[in-house]
Image (tube, rainbow, N blue to C red; front, side, top):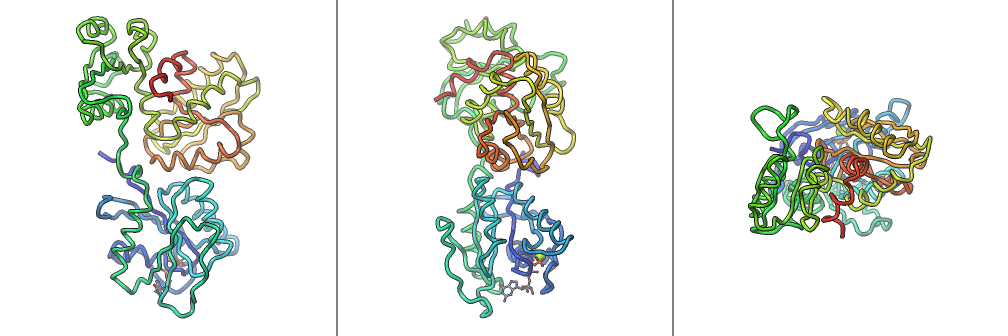
Length: 394
Ligand SMILES: Nc1nc2c(ncn2[C@@H]2O[C@H](COP(=O)(O)OP(=O)(O)OP(=O)(O)O)[C@@H](O)[C@H]2O)c(=O)[nH]1
Ligand SMILES: [Mg+2]
């Protein structure tokens, strides 16, 4: 059920003419990308789906040369650099090592993005062996010539090695706190906002995770929770819709762990430990403090009213402070000076991969700005944060 957007994305970066588009064709086995010896053939980032054995479908992103020049050329370079923010793995092709390669490598280091260095055109005597790149010795490099078909398999093996498993394998949601045979009660009010005839995605995801774990899942509405608990022998955990958290918390005895679907989902992507810590910063916000909200969807913004209305209102109400909130949507670049913000809050990131969420948040942490997530920030504002996160705190 992986949406198109959730396929792992692999970006190809390097100077003009280094062989990026040739590599797209080499990997896919098709003449998809235009290859020529004219520098600057690829202008905008181009995306192409392919299958990689052992990984599944991925999206390859071919980009313009990172050494392009002139006014238009520089714009193309910035487009290529922006594409880095959406990849789970960067392939950096090079025939020489200098400032453009350093820029990509530095970006990857700062944003926690895995990178595979590919020494290109090794058949061409024009490119004598350049010394290893001692700045990033932990990243091995691959020697490639696209005229040799026998290198394809080893290259795919290297890509599989470099691509984090989290980019293509679903993470367990509750595997660290729920075991085989444990009973988990799921409280889901069926009110007017519930869709007709089905459950919503977070509920289905948690249910499927519990089935994978061979746990026992019991669904009920809040009104039947008391009866449900009484009929069960000490359930292991209760997960509730956050809208009815207070009502549910009054019924669930203190010794039974209680959390919400949005807190469970917040652990799936992003930096949960940093969120746990960063969310507390809401309590220290002062009049005039600026909070940056990062919303990852670009279209059909389903969380729009959380970031633009609900969450700002909840924070102002809880703190009594005049907080300034700014929303950045889609994959638009972050402001260069993040230290002007007192807090950065990321949405659930349902349309982006875990690596993309991480790449968005690491610069904030680097700038010393605490980070949180929509679900956790709302939990904090509604006073349920401590109890809802207790079971996940180490
Ligand atoms: N000798 C040799 N030439 C190669 C190899 N791979 C690609 N080329 C040639 O290098 C030239 C540039 O290849 P492209 O794939 O268009 O390079 P690119 O990085 O996409 O270039 P831009 O789109 O301009 O940034 C073409 O003439 C290719 O045939 C290789 O492994 N060895
Ligand atoms: Mg090209």
